[in-house]
Amino acid sequence: MSDYGWPVYGHDWAVAQLAKSIAYGRVRHAYLITGTDSIGKNTLAHAFALALNCTHPDESVRPCLQCRSCHLVMSRNHPDMLYSEQDSTTGTLKIDSIRSVMRGLSMKPFETRYRIALFESFDQAQPRAQDALLKTLEEPSPSAILILTATHVEALLPTILSRSQILNLRPVSLALIRDVLVAHYGADADYAELLARLSGGRIGWAICALQDPTLLEQRDWALDTLEACIQRDRAGRFELAQDLGKDKLALGPILELWQTYWRDLLLLTREGRVSPANSDRLVSLQQFAIHLTPDEVVQALRATRTLLDTLRYNLNVRLALEIMFLDYPGLRRE
Image (cartoon, rainbow, N blue to C red; front, side):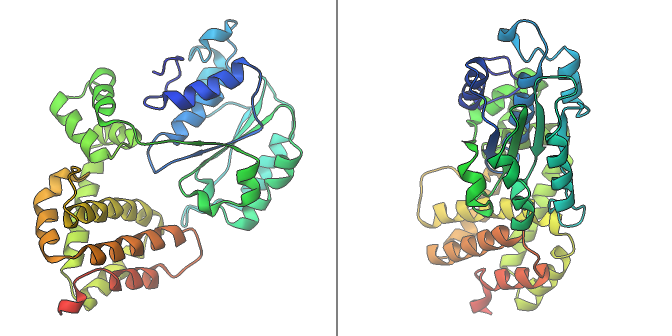
């Protein structure tokens, strides 16, 4: 728990800022919470919604997590909480869904002080879909609040950025993640230490990995795949591109993980003293660092970042993967 009693770990500064805005009656009509995947964006957004509409008579203890409103928000069944839908295949936010939410947001609250619209992963909305928010942003209802979350701010329209209060969540300290896993989730201390190191400061990922061991298995598979890819020839890489291109939604987290691997390699090739995020892969990283130059690693990192940034567009995923793999090191040695 934060110092304000919000169910949020590791982002006390953000909680303090939002809690003070409520206490001083300075709640904005639009908020944008940014940060890498699984860092706690949606958790903070829901905690803010809890505090805004909690009905406990003592304002100092809101959110109480006990009243009807708090229970409904936590179960995502609150009549004054509105959510948009994502396309099940591409992850893109549907423009019809956004418009429907905007119509609902224009109505007066049914039970509480505010009607709150939460748009998760709003950077997955195309510009035309983002346009559907502009009228509400320009002429907000006093009882309407928009909360957007996004990983890539550059995907958002400048108009939305200028009209939103932006909270950029930073990685949580590994010590805090370890302590939270032990104290609040009953994790073994050594295992909590491992998850904290592998999380890269993403407390949401660490908690999910503790509760679902398959996440570690998926991570191992993704890193095994990358290490094998570096050693494959062009035909092998194109075959991998065909396999990975079948599931666009699953590709984003894989590329995010690959980025951390390339960053670790860059540190090693430049003889950096910072411990790698993927510390369990230290032997493999050291072996690759012997044969790769910093420029080769930078090129691979940029190629991975480029594909990750363009995934939100309607693109040929297989072709985009093939282009990325051509920028990965190793092919020149064939």
